[in-house]
Length: 435
Image: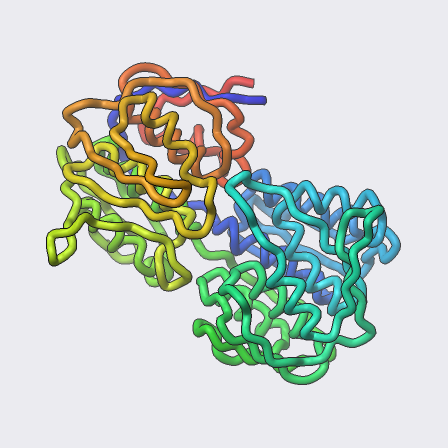
């Protein structure tokens, strides 16, 4: 298990380009299973989760070619129908969170798929009910296979249906949309997730011949087609990286330019950092964060404490709350961080408290942060990354701390951030990877 050794307190400078969006990549790569023709995808982040998904596809019989860094072509004409029903395949799916996205394509194209309980971050319950309920509404039969410890879904021909999702699940919506694209008839999905990741998936499917209306809204209508063809697609910049870099510049009181951010797809993220008192400027499609000695948190109009909470798009993504919490430890003022979606994601704050942060963990979902206004720097510490987003938040805390810190279990960070140590060292950080 590897670790990062971080020398804190170093100023940063220069510019950085965000990687391709991890969450979009997992959906887009899974969608190549819907056709036997060639699909080319650019701006794929070469992170651990993506590499594992690529290996899973290759094991299924997909021809995967790395044409250049971040650009891959896929041909899914030779899927091994027996392997995708095997114990080995189901076990590999169970170890990879992104594997849930292959279920919809396999079910719609081949009439059978296994849905293993997925792995991934240890951040609390992550239900799969939305996915399975959607497949059942499309006409699939579902039974639990106690030997494989997975749900078996079978359908000779999926049929379009109306459904009201019990939650606006991003992965659930994406999975159902992919399955419905080859179903017979019309599918209507209400309370659909409308994050840019889902929008991008829908646009890619349309370019493959799918018929989808309502893209960008929470009401999607999919008219099933008999066959999808090949296409080319480019993945958006990762909004979570963009937000992480904004927070990194602020907590280190450093000027930084974040280039090619696809600003129109960032939603409320820039405004939420402004509520923390962080100045940022849009310069074309770049974001410039000036060096600030102090940043003061806003209050609500009635004078009550500022609250930052996650919400379905176009609300704030939950993946950035850990970063915002760390940034708030050095703000002027107080803020309530309300993580609604996952009940274990704030448990990493005990490590920040050990580093000298003033944080009151109210319950598993809420924490009050009382900022030091840079009068008291965080102290270096030893910690272990419990999940991707807590890991990057810990890294930001260590970069701003006094002394040398160590973060273990950095494989969690590598799952979501490509060569993060090398890229941050180019800005002036001093991060050493130790195996």
